[in-house]
Structures are given as C-alpha cells and as structure tokens.
Length: 351
Image 1 (tube, rainbow, N blue to C red):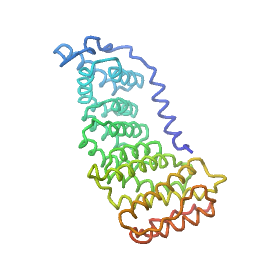
Image 2: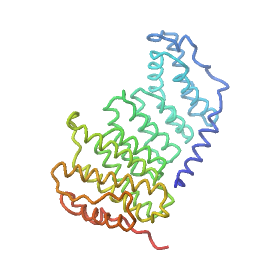
Image 3: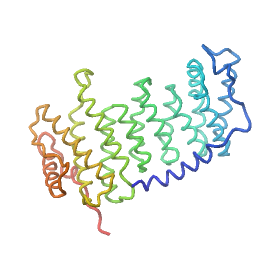
Image 4: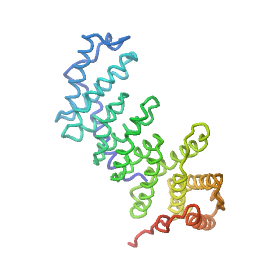
C-alpha cells in the first residue's frame, strides 16, 4: 500500500538514477593518491588542491544543468570511498561541511536535492545546518533526502549529542507539515533514534493524526506508521529496561501516549476483516497488540492497578473486537483518563 510513494519515488528515481550515471567531463579530476594517502595534516599545496576541488564542485551543484549537478554530486561523494586514510577523510569531510551549505542557495530543486544527498555522507557536525535548511522544504524531492540525512546523522554513534538534539525541533516542525509517508518514515526514524522524549511524543501525535488521514483516504498507505511503530516499540522497551543503569527514566506520560497510539492502531486494523486484511494492517495489529500489552504491564509495575485485556493473537475478529472495547474503556479510566475524542478512530465518510 505504497501508492503515495510512487509519485515521490518516480520523481526521485528520475533525478537520482538518471543523473547517477553522469560522469564529469570537465573541472578538477579526482584527487591524487598523495592527498588521499595523507597521514597527518594536509600540507599547504594539498590543502589548496582539496579546497579548489570542493569549491569547484559545490559551485557546480548550483548549475542550471541537471547533468552538471549530478556530476558535482558524484565528485563530492567519491573521496569518501576511494581508500583515503582516516586523516584525509576527516579533513576532507570538514572542508565539505564548511562549504556545502552554499549549494542550498540553488534556485533549482535538483540542485538542493543533490546537495542533501552529499550531506548524507558528511560526518562533521556543521552538516546539521544544511540538514535543517532542507527540513524547511515541503517539496518531497528535497524533503526526502533531507529526512534521510537527518536519520543518518541520528544513527551516527560518534555524533555530538547536542547537535543531534538540535535537530529535534526542526524535525518536528517538518513532520507536522509533511503529508508524504515516504518522507515521514525518515522523520519518524530520526526522531526515534535521537531518543528525545519530546520527539517521541511528537512522533506518536503525528502517527495518531495519520490514523484519521488514512481512514479518510486509504490510498495514502500506512507503511510509514507501521515502521515507526515497530522502531518506537523497540526503543521504548529498551529505555525502560535500562532505567536503573542509565539513570534515564521513561516518563509516564510517554507510556500513556504509547498505549493510546497502539490501541488506536488496533482499532484501525480491526476495521478490515481478517480474511481481507492487508499485510500492513495485519502486521500493525500484531505489533500494536504487543505494544499495548507491554505498556499496560509497565504501568502496573509502577503501581497502577490495570486489568490488562487478553492478547489478540490467534483470536477471532469478534473476540478481538471485544478486547478492543476493554482497551478503550481502560484508556478512559485512571491513571490514563483519555477523552473520547482522543481515543475514537473516525469512521469513513459515506461515498
């Protein structure tokens, strides 16, 4: 059910793949082996060579010609995988990070898009400014590589935590206005990976909005929310299990919202009879059932007195719907006290 992705995917494939085979026919050639093999700080001559190389290809990213832009992208990425020493790559990376932001001024979508593809390779923290600029854009061809770059940075275990946290607010703002599941999946991935509880709660709020959007238009798909829900469940359980060691306490509010989200996911999935339920919704039901069971158990372990409904695994639709009613009643009671409007999944409008 990835129909909405096809529009984005077609555009991206046309720009990525069509341009991907283009090779530079002019400009600086590949960096020499003597530079790639540097064992320490680059000398004055080698520094000038690298600066000239990066300056030229960053400027080409702003070209009006898509083929020249693709060539520039390829040339800027190549030195990361040409067998250079760690000393070289670190210096090259910093030079690219300092200069690449200028290419986000390109008036062309394909220029900004390819700039963000380069940004996905950059390890220096200054790349966060480029990612933030990309996250401000709504057009999917630019928003998608920006989201991928944000997720890559979030996964970078050596990245500065403060810089990661600085991406949370821009990611939340981008997520609020983004309608493409293809892009949203990477917003979810990035925010979940950063492990900021405000970010997690924003992800769940957006996924709950998507429940209503999916009911109104099933063609938008729900794969992004399935993947986001799966990743979030792993992270929530992991953080909770390591509280004693890490000293980081999972807020009760986050667990409440996690339980609400999973119950709404269960209701959404149960709207389709099991005999015709899509693979996405069938998997969503199984994951949401597990998540709700865990959340209720975690609340009980913290002192709540919740009667946990049985698992829906291997249950008939009629049985599962009865259990769903129990879950919804549970959400209204102490300690959760969600309002009906927060719990209810809207019904599809009559044609």
